[in-house]
Image (cartoon, rainbow, N blue to C red):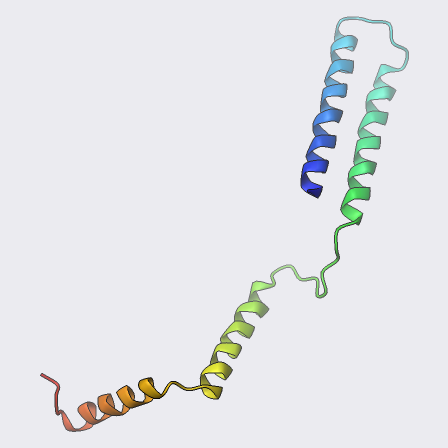
Length: 107
């Protein structure tokens, strides 16, 4: 939603600036046309900054949050597997351990 508003502002501003540039190239006598173009750019930038200021701020601002989120996900996976082990997997592990030690059923 916010991104579409920003894009709409940018395209509208570009259109107005293009019209002013065309009038300047055509030699129309508009006083201070360069100042009008600069003012248009400044107004658009100000409106975009105001829209971006309404975005929510991150709780922990980081440049690379994957370093922490992947480590946290790995830790949660370990904790969940320790808290709720699967009985079927434990039984299969025991069977595999016997096969490894004794060699029974390893054809």
